[in-house]
Length: 436
Image 1 (cartoon, rainbow, N blue to C red):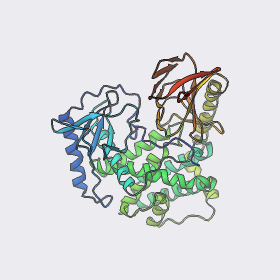
Image 2 (cartoon, helix red, strand yellow):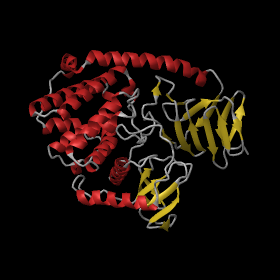
Image 3 (cartoon, one colour):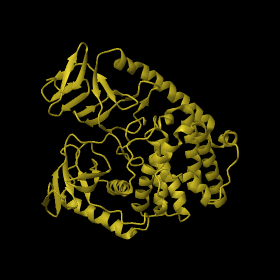
Image 4 (cartoon, helix red, strand yellow):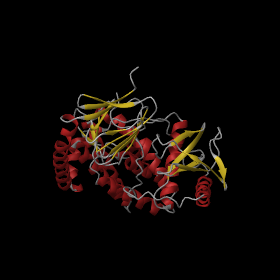
């Protein structure tokens, strides 16, 4: 069984995300055509070199509030209509927007949720992130979830932070000797974490490959120079380093760092044929890195060179803050009336550093967007609790107001599909189909 929310891009692009206003009127047909042509030019310039094939597929820009679609090509079913050189329509409101490859009208599109601001790098990067997922999907790689909840444990986070610091040093190094030593240190910290959490290694690798290789692809193809690519990757380390949750986030930057080192040695991503290929092991082979026999002992001795005392203090402080916050929040889901949602085929959207993973009850999210068979739920600030097995979700049942297809509570909003209802049973509420 997999635990944890299905992995979405969460609309975070190595340090340029979060809490933007929702005005996106700049995406006119004329502006969209400019982006479609620019994206095509990048694909033509690459010539299929990076992945051994042309990555470009039709692109679909979708505005968040209006759900207006501006696409580069028609769909097979004719849902999109031609207008000023592009194709327009409306994306269903009950579906989550994400940077993914999605089928619409029996045609595969790269979905790009339109950012609030006209950020050229970001928009192109979203497209190539989605292109990578489309290519992975064509190879049968389309994972729904990864069990990486160990990455919210203090020791796992400490090993990961040490690995990032070593990778930062390696990618920044100007001399080959210093670079190779830093790579070896990073691989030692990586090995120590894998030794400590062997049950999670396969999911770590799959997450790194699925999201990290997508990050590497857009930083490789959408930057103007190797130096710009390097700086964006290093900025990504600095951004992700501060997140209070790593379980659903580390793979986005982690896999990209190793892919960068592999690319420096001329490694071809086209030879990767498994979703759990070990990018760290491939890096060790290409750089002729010899690993120690007893990794964790060596890891402990070299950690002092990477600010281990500072990292340890950061993690103790983080753990204390989270425990205090969770103790306050938990009673709202276990001791007070709640609304119960049975999860059947959910799709989620959430902020990347938001989750608080609990030992047994599940994961608390401060804000969450969920679509399922029963409809669409948007939770803001008040929080919700999702069970580890993804079968149940709870929100506080405070100030609940119900109409036929709509219900609200404190900082949550529910839009129900036909043949579903929200009913009160004793002190709690349940989303269910009406009884005959």
